[in-house]
Length: 138
Ligand SMILES: Cc1cc2nc3c(=O)[nH]c(=O)nc-3n(C[C@H](O)[C@H](O)[C@H](O)COP(=O)(O)O)c2cc1C
Image (tube, rainbow, N blue to C red; front, top):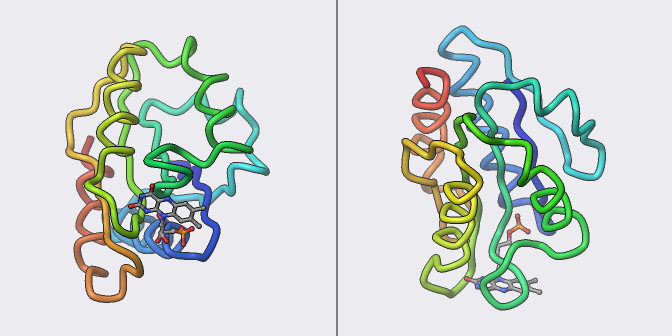
């Protein structure tokens, strides 16, 4: 499974690492890919799109790399499953609600709730690992 993420200060990256641990604990492969390095066509061969981005700007996805990537894949993800995650600092989680609705509008199935964590995931490592296990079972 491929986990594509953006992270400025490492919190979402740490979530991605823990999620990958959960996937591996379930006996599946997991590959971490910074969105700057992603090969779009090979990512789109996946049945489950695992995507992580923190809340940036004002309750939006990171605008330079991650947002254009999501825009680019939006017409090519119909029928796939999506699992979404990210860290935030002070908001209500609105950015992730919008991200989820956007994936649903692109005909993705978002059957497990996105995982959002306030700042560093240090106190929520088990939640991230469990989330990885849920993703592996999709
Ligand atoms: C430029 C900037 C804008 C941000 N905007 C928001 C925001 O609108 N809402 C929010 O909850 N957190 C916001 N944050 C806080 C980040 O989401 C938070 O620090 C998060 O842990 C960063 O994750 P990362 O370490 O993966 O980059 C913002 C942070 C930065 C640097």
